[in-house]
Image (spheres, rainbow, N blue to C red):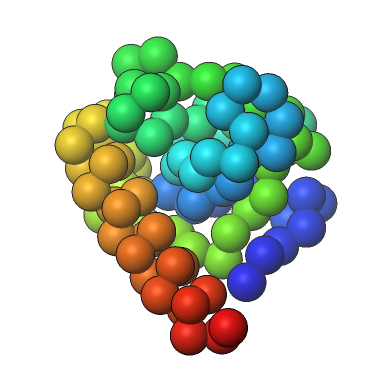
Length: 103
C-alpha cells in the first residue's frame, strides 16, 4: 500500500505528510516541481491556489491516484477545492474501511 520515497510521484496521487505543521495529514500532489519537491493541496487547509511545497523525503506515497483530480489537472491545469475534498474523503473512507477490516 505504501511506496518508498524514491518512487517518482504522480499528479493526483495521495500522500501522507510526515514532517511539518501538517504532519500525519493526507493531501494530493498537484504539481511536480523537480525530482525533489512537489506541491500538495487538500482543498481544506491547503487550497489549490495556495499549495504547500514539500520535500518528497517528508512524504509517504500512498498507492492511490484519484483519476478525477488527475484528469482535471491534466485537462485544465486546475482543480476545484471541493473536488479535492471529495476525492480525499473518498480515499479516507476506503483506507479506514480496509484498516478496520484488517484488525
